[in-house]
Length: 120
Image 1 (cartoon, rainbow, N blue to C red):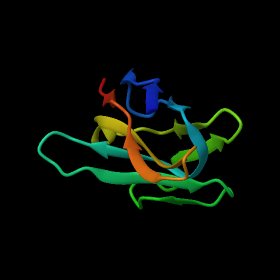
Image 2 (cartoon, rainbow, N blue to C red):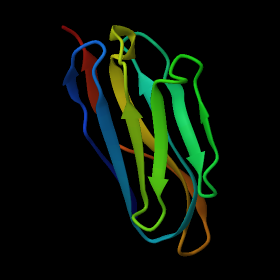
Image 3 (cartoon, rainbow, N blue to C red):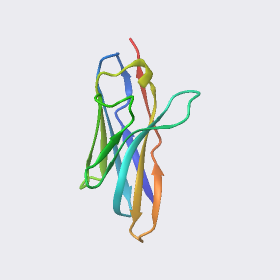
Image 4 (cartoon, helix red, strand yellow):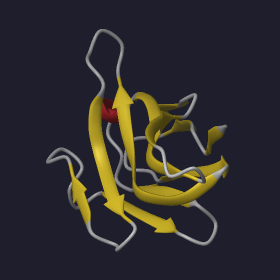
């Protein structure tokens, strides 16, 4: 009923930039929070950044000052601008949304993931 579709991943050189996008669709009343997680091979999934519909944001210490999360409430979209990327940023990146559906049920949803590889 609710889908999250990510785009924007790919191969980028160290020090470069990349922008990830995620758009939600379906029977949605509101989206209180949206965020990005990542999972590298052999590691647990971790929070990268998250933002609320009111605009507040929080970041993992490892990406502070380099990544910026933003959202467009009208488009039901969230973005992750990744600057000064490092090889350790290599991972599958997943969009996550805390969604209140049209029936006022509340659930968390995940996107399918988009791969980011930082390498020269």
